[in-house]
Image (tube, rainbow, N blue to C red; front, top):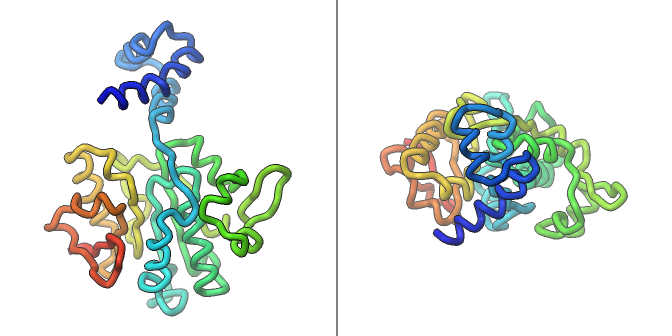
Length: 248
């Protein structure tokens, strides 16, 4: 608990100083009065955790390549493969999926694949759309072959190429209060997100996701989240080595 209090203070105190408040309590007090929507969004973004990397937990992507993707695109009946990367942060996960599909099928465009990536942070979404990454971010998960194939040097940064950017549509989304960004998905990635929700909010999110999965669709969650899925909504797909579930 003390660690969490320290983290909250470390993230909110600089924001309170910037907004001209004498203390975090004063800033929170004004927010409770319902004033300052911009300040409210700034507080939310300051508290968000954006830890991610390209091809994070590589065995997930190995499973996707071997088991989740169809033999050919577009998938029957001639519609695009639909993927939702929820809480996408800086875009590394959806771009990793785009690269994987390019490697899997060779030629891929928006008629074949529709990748929707969502996040609560407007700042992270804008960064993700631009597709710029530092050398350190590239080194976390991107090998030299993928770096040369999918990224272009831009001064001190790297930018994922336009073909990969064209495959991903980024949009703002609140998992708790907003409707899903598309009615039906073949694949939903909700990894390392549920651990930050209480039980009621978690179940609300999972019921919403349940309604978006196609009968043949799959939901992937983080390793520590596998036991959090309601057994009346999902069953584990044992063909996968990672936590992957189908809707009941």
